[in-house]
Length: 371
Image: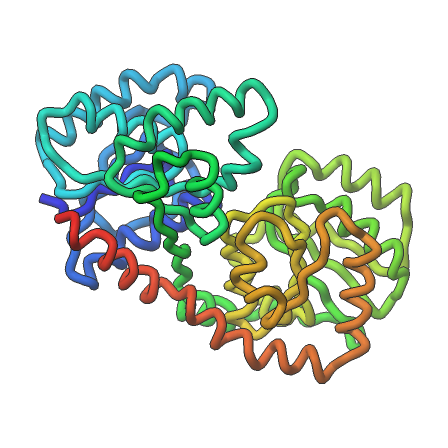
């Protein structure tokens, strides 16, 4: 019997999938046996060593079909809970948090539940009719959980402000990053930037939330052949960004390098790491850059970057969607090797606060009283 059953949509590349894959395999080293219940499979799923893995649905249904299959997923979750009852069920993401709240109501098995919120509530649960519907669902379902955990202080604070019934249940627990593995992969062979060129690296999916349009505009404003940008990632905004690059040429070259299975050799050789995201509930890539001693510049979006960088002590924060401010920050660090050296030297110690081992210790302290 698992002490903690993790419930997640899948182990797809990205924030939630990575976080769940990391902790499922690492938490047993801290005295808690784990199991994993996934709604669907994924072709590029993170591999886990854990043998207790169950799937609610066959194949990889797209989002709309997955939502339509939730009643079937709930039935299979209830059956799984009956066959292998855990002490705690830990769900990740809105869909799974709602599913586990329903299971807690319907199941004959008694278990504690901990819902992890990876979204920024103030952004994701207000505005459109669909977001307001999600807010209504959260208000209805989340109080049924034993605890509700935000992946940053800001997320937990938003939850408590938006849903007063959750105030006594809200906690925060930063995501954990396997820093030793990041360093190991970063030591591999990677292309060195040309002599005399400051290489700026960005990592993330090419979508609207990552706001690479601001990065491209900052490159145009810099117009410096001594500063070059490499964006690692792919996604639906590629063609729009290529059109923007063609329309706004700059001597600061921007390369859309596509997805990299192992981005860390390129990141480790960078002079700067830049994040232009409009929301980052946590920000795993920032921690990875700090771990490798790469100075960080990040848009001050809700909520992770300011917390990871301690308000600007361990990196530079700039306003969101402000290409001029981003260009000025890059120029300032490009012209100040002493400051880049300070940030590079202090980064690894700051990253240690978000290590996977620290995350597991904090998670064990959260789960143990519920067993």
